[in-house]
Image 1: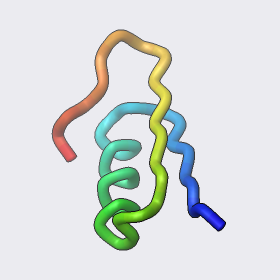
Image 2 (image 1 turned 180 degrees about the horizontal axis):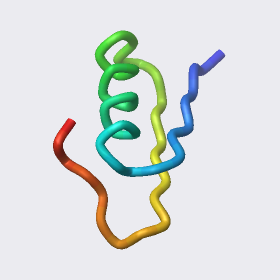
Image 3 (image 1 turned 60 degrees about the horizontal axis):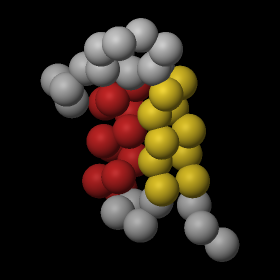
Image 4 (image 1 turned 90 degrees about the vertical axis):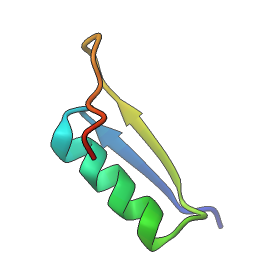
Length: 43
């Protein structure tokens, strides 16, 4: 079964959680949703 993770919020904390999840399990599918026009690339 495919592991999936949904991140709500594209601020620094959301992108950090997404990048940590991918580092721990590169096969994991990670999707991030942000309602505003800007997503943080600081992670």
